[in-house]
Image 1 (cartoon, rainbow, N blue to C red):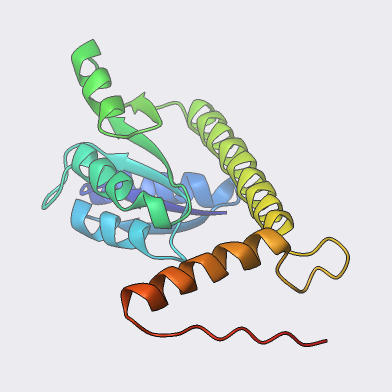
Image 2: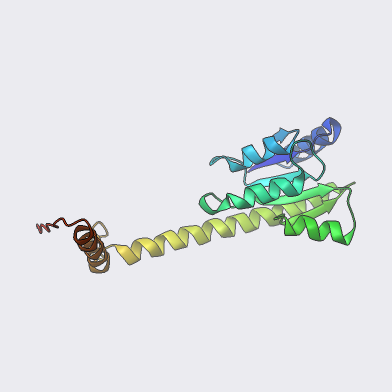
Length: 179
């Protein structure tokens, strides 16, 4: 699975990169928050992200807010904030910005991997949920026998909209039936 690491400290970024590559992740590493937000907003971008709080251009919570703002049309991204900030207020701020998890530095590699596996499980469940929703949408709009034509409910809805549009535009609507 693809994972994004965003950390402005080169040594920390390299340590995380090696740790996660050994754990089997395909790692993309960036050094600032703007690059992280751009990567995570791409349709084929990573779905797991490990963000440092303090970064140039856009901090970790800022990246979370930006990713969540554009999340409606894309796949869900599981975000872990990794920081030395330990106060309860900081944890609350991080989670309220849209992070899914919060881990303090120095981190334990096994704990980090366990939290990322949790993220993978959530992403897998989200994928199954989207798949089920699409299957239900298809079944609700297509003929059960042929599965290729719209069902009566969809046809009546489309016809109603077209009749309303032609009335609004003082036009006409033609309906052709064929076998």
